[in-house]
Length: 394
Image (cartoon, rainbow, N blue to C red):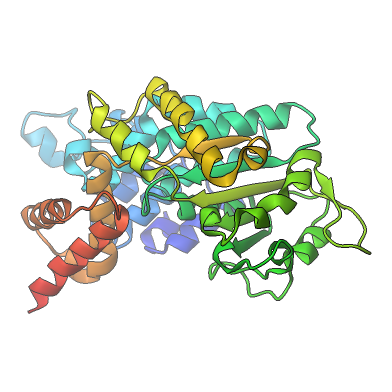
């Protein structure tokens, strides 16, 4: 109760991760989730709700009057079993509604079960960092589940492909942090020779500053789980610079340079990000019968099958034959766009956004959706919300 009431997201996370309290503990007569949703003093309500859900809070408690008792005003109106409005989907803002509904969805539980007993279980929390891409997450968890159940000398190699601004880099950045393993990010745009990839230092601003090269990183973490992100892999100046990846991706062991000992990389998770196939993704989306609904598993498998030859044609069949899976990232549904815009509004608007009426919030979100650019994805929504807020200050 004190952690939630402190309005401190980091404190809520600390309490949950330390085991001092559980995400489904009661806070007086309410569940922790109901307590957070009904506390009108919280400025960081969305972030706190996301932390509770990420650590396993059960949204079904919101339907139980014993864990989500009605306000006395509801009794006076003759609705003794009606929950507080802020704990119903209709009474939540677009972002909170999205995360609560996602946590309560049957496909979310099924997908989480794929990696529940594996080392990769913490990745289930990525749903509360990344909006959309349910099918990409599902396929990723299937691959990780299969890998954890069998001994394989080859490492996991995943390519995240599709249009800009749809979460590829975000997932790649969060991967190591959620698993609590070291990460090394290579900007593939700077490679000028075959050896450059192994001599490159990490380029991700979210990671600790390090002067270690990729070779040194792999030697330091040999035999351990770690993550190597190959950012914008298709922008490598010459595809032949990628050929040095063939041996480590196939054998799980390689000698990067003459005079150095072989390095075991079987436990490395390689994540490549790329815009390859973005035209295909949009064409496939236009042909769907219900483009504003979450893509079905069958539709996604079809898209994966169409995308892989395109990636092969761009990066080469030899390289792609060593890739575990290619995951297309797809356009956002309307609910996902609304959730992205709502999070942007509360993040950028701060105190002003918290004081807005529901009608004003809805107006800004609708204006932001009108400014959405599929080719730019979430970035266009953030820009549209920012523009709306600037107009209000004038």
